[in-house]
Image 1 (cartoon, helix red, strand yellow):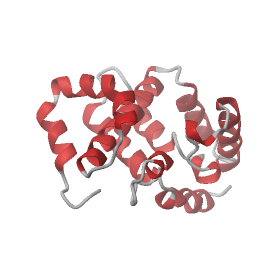
Image 2 (cartoon, rainbow, N blue to C red):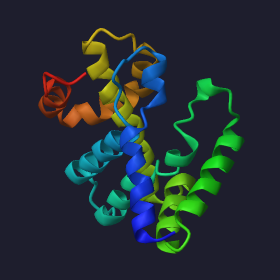
Image 3 (cartoon, rainbow, N blue to C red):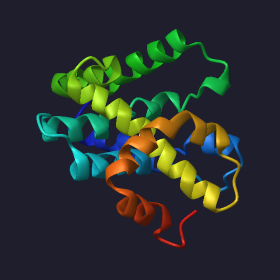
Image 4 (tube, one colour):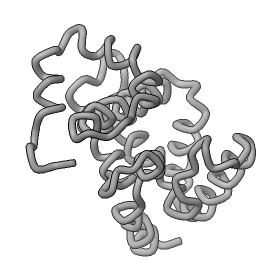
Amino acid sequence: MTDAELLAEALGLKHLDRAGWKRVGVSRPESVAAHSWSMALAALIRCPPGLDRARVLALAVLHDLAEVRVGDITPHDGVHREEKKRREREAAEALFAGHPELLALWQEADAGQTAEARYIKELDNLDMGFQAERYMMHGHDVSEFLDATAAARRAWAGATTRARAAIVRRPPWSP
């Protein structure tokens, strides 16, 4: 796949809604691309000392890219975890054909075995929690997401209570 083809296909993430939010009735949910951007910004703001920030950013940008081909598969979709991983792996291999360095980064994020990849998994959970807080403020029942992310949100908020409040409250026009 050429650079232009990869970029053109990846832009499809801007139009792929996060399925969990749709399932609980959010009419205009964030896209997968918006979620990845939010994770990348969080990584810029709070990348722990000792981690390779550039690598963390790359993992954040790439971690859900296979979803442009397979969709945002959630545990409620009835797809077994191994089948989901197989579909995403095959999609990533096809997307990153000709880009072995990007495939290696995607595989690193998926495996979650490096410190940077484990941090990305933490940010993934944390971002879901922050987004759930925002949707809750707009009247959506997102309790399952809040429960699943409670520990991550507490850990993050411990040192950044005021910043966290600003994240949840702004901008006022967003869902």
